[in-house]
Length: 70
Image 1 (cartoon, one colour):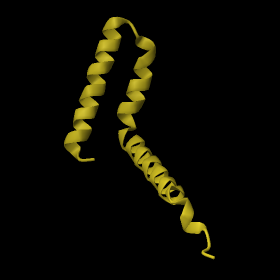
Image 2 (tube, helix red, strand yellow; image 1 turned 120 degrees about the vertical axis):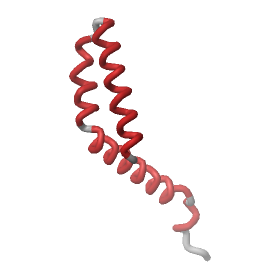
Image 3 (tube, helix red, strand yellow; image 1 turned 60 degrees about the vertical axis):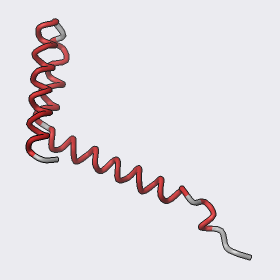
């Protein structure tokens, strides 16, 4: 993820936090603040989970590959 995308996401989270504060959903503000501060860690976790899911899908996709030919 490049710096422009990170900046856009952080600005979006700030706007979302402002809207939540104006509407009265103050309980959600710590969650948004955590997301804003931990954006790099969350992105790395998402990429890791996607890679793991792709690996599992690729492993179990072709069930016939493990059968021995008679």
